[in-house]
Image: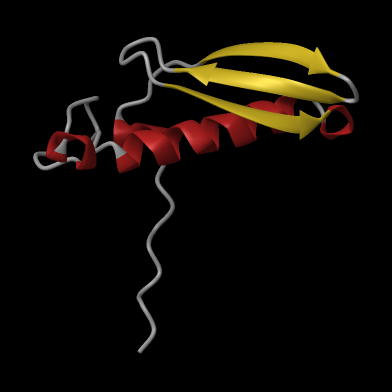
Length: 88
């Protein structure tokens, strides 16, 4: 039986209002760090410089939204009860 497809989350779904970006050149690639200043959550990714800065920003923000959703953040930056990191 197939699992139903989940809707892709938007920044508003996890309470993401602002994203800070840091770019560093690593050989032929760019290392992108995206940070949510409200929660302090950050993600890192490596991308091709040819993709362009705007595309890399979009992908880094998408990864940040994914991580925030997995950690249980909802529309106002609040956590859902029973997030995965509460098990530890």
